[in-house]
Image: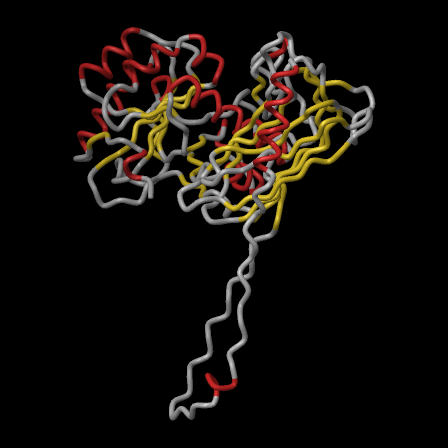
Length: 393
């Protein structure tokens, strides 16, 4: 333990020796540079767009959001903790604010009790991350920023709460960062509350039921995932159908191999359908963000690619949904304009299917025949199924 602590102190001392780059100053023009006479009058510069409001982008920052139904047992909404429920739990004993905080008790000598979350960011943008912590050798920082970022840390909070803060500017390709907090080896439990990642609010996601295109294509989307039949799997393989799957995390986690097989056709993908299939329009924004971000994280862990589309259950959404989706790094909130589920053939606009139409179906015992009927309707309209993500701009 003493070796680890000595190494920690030495490495942190070295890291913190580097100061954050100072903001560049704008120098006023000199008299010489402004004395020349010009015969033309410069056009007024266009008005700059107002800066985006600064908001807290962290998911479940105060550990107050209730866990959605169908979530993993013992999960902390918005967070992934390496030790799972063995180490991480919510506590109502003396939180920094509100009614609860996160307390982590590393279960082994080789555990730091790390808890993380993915936060959507913009390239070339400055953010401030902070958290109130209690314990010894507690650390806060982020990876994936595009720049080396030393951790903010404290040797001891003396039994009370202390705020850790770090500031960083993202690199030119950064779209998400991995925020983390952890303790240190064999230093006992620590607590965290009131986490913040302050920065500009992202532009809300776009809500749509179709994909604008002049190509003669339609898009097959399939929701939920509770009933997975070999007949549907065979039909998809035989017809080489690109499908966009929107499974819930629980059925996807129960049978991930099935969803890998049915999305093996090029253009297919697995996207976000929330954690618990709740009506998002009836939830406050912080709960909507948990529903969308946690489902995003589950799909990423299971299938190795991060969703870029969310399908709101029941097609129910509001302005908070669009902002919550954007806060999770998702740009499209997708409904549909045709339904071929459970024997239906409903097109919600006049006439046959049109280019760019999105067709909704469900993973049910009728899916094989639903797919056959949807494919026949597309053929009759001179259209072919295509990969949804290939057409998103």
